[in-house]
Length: 400
Image 1 (cartoon, rainbow, N blue to C red):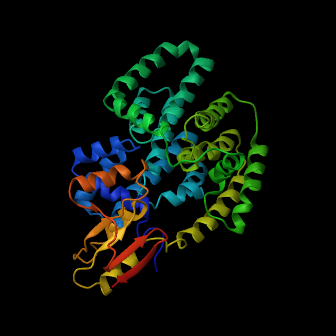
Image 2: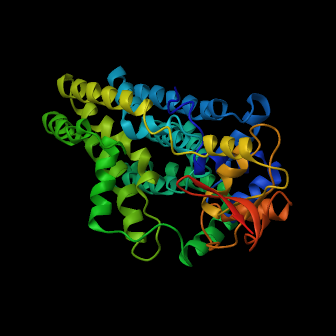
């Protein structure tokens, strides 16, 4: 029986594997042409050279950083309950089993805040790595420096020096970041922000993306947890800045350029969990929250395992005849290419040149076409071919 660790890759995960399989210079050029910093894909690139590109092997990277995030949560709050709440928060838990950069981002952002709180010079390491992992890390750095300016001004000189070091370390990627920002201004797949977008983003930090009866209890339990823990401390401002600035700045920018996306806020699930624990020694409500999380995660672990192309490509290969060709489209090409080679006898894959506006994934398609791995072509008016599209759906087309 499949679970969320062993299930087939879905689109973004297959995209991760395909871009990470490229020679490293091609990988860097492709991420530079897309909207992603290169660190996570570089890690996967070298990891796959040792452990292979299977679903479990690639997802182990996310699991490792998920566990490291739990360790960092414990070191920050000095409470094992803090580690458990971060690890089993449904939003974080779900992405611990996906080949995406989210748990790396969660770990690095948390490590950055922990070392920021300790005023350690080691702060520079997770922070610069975070900036090379996800662009939302910039919003966390802004929050940190605003906190220093308002509450630690006597140390401002030291923090400005560290800021200069961060800027110098980021210079190699800065031209690509500016180019990507310009591309986003010209149009992107992220939609405009509405009130329901904002409310939904806040809720998902506590409840995750699962929709079940138990998840409707989570906001109530969390509010009880937070209210009973409340007390006035300087740390409150640290957590307030940690949450409010990285949440609010993308909202403001999205009035002009569409960058606000709830999944990019996953690192804010951490302060949502740690803030109340930092303010209280009471364990009743956080324990109730953890129990519900474990129940939700248990259901989620064995759910949502059927949204991938793995069984479809097996069916296609089992029924394929000599000369068959697969046609697909941009949103599904990564999954199709990945599973097309499952039996070592790949069919030719052609991508239909529709909907090729600049979007996440387009740069990878361009690279694969340029290197001759794929071709862009419309389906023929006559003949036999397979047509695969998101859903996932497939059709054997036979036109005489």
